[in-house]
Amino acid sequence: MRVGLMFPPGTDPGELPAVARRAEQAGFDFFCCGEHVFFHGPMTNAFVGLAAAAGATERIGLMSALTILPVYPAALAAKLVATLATVSRGRFELGVGVGGEHPPEFEAVGVPLAERGRRTDEALEVLHRLLAGGKVTFRGEFTTIEGQELQPVPQKRPPVWVGGRKGAAMRRAARHADGWLPYLVAPERLAGSLAQVRELAVGYGRQPEDIRGGVYLWSGVDTDGDRARREVVSAVSGIYQQDFESYADRYLLHGTPARVGERLAEYAEAGAESVIFAPACADHDRAIDLFATEVLPGIRARGVSRV
Image (cartoon, rainbow, N blue to C red; front, side, top):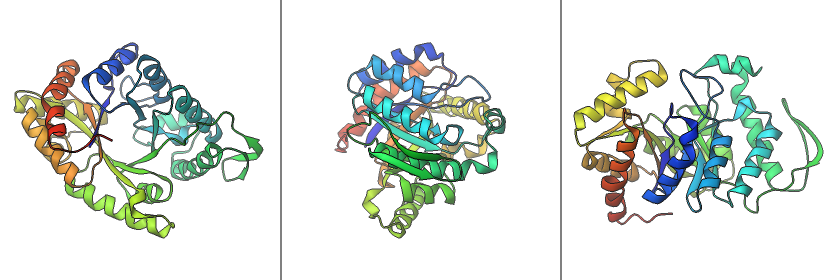
């Protein structure tokens, strides 16, 4: 199982290089950054944030979790992906979502909310074609490219993860992605949705094993399990502007290091080869340190190899 650290939302972006270095030194397999144009609080931009992380680190993988693909012109997104993959020396993985939790950001960039799914599907097709190298001609609903070549392209196309929860996201992952990355899911739902995505992939002429499983987990870890629960409920309720009390035990990762390790083992059993630890608590530094020293060693000791 690979374990990634999410840059905590609301943290000063100036701290991002230091947090990325810390993740590398602590033994995390990859470092993640999310994005919104506008949201309920401070947010980074994934491409810019991960470029800073790439310059501050040497070995750790980098993943956007998630890039809101429909707010970008498809060719511009391809250029940003190619550049980040190149400057990071092949360490970048693209996580894709359609967004929609905050409609004003779509209005601000001139993208109708109802088009975000179609725009994402088209952009993924454009990305695949441009990143393959050579001249591309593409005439779609939102994108027109006449015999243009993206230069330079990375030696190897970055893996693509599609995030979400609903059927459209599953179909998108089955057709375009290397990995399925749902959020706010219990282990049993992860297992079921991953099986669905793999079944759908066969319909697109792919093999079930072409799709890897992952999960994004809003998390709180503390020596006091009750405090961990309270803090993650409070933080995630603030992020989504709704009360998560009734969802906490099903969808949020929280508890003592031992309990968090047990829960991660359940996700691994459900098919998660990659998990994102997204600290949602009052003291991010303490949670990261506790996870790195008390949870990561247990994951490694279970004999699950790092990939």
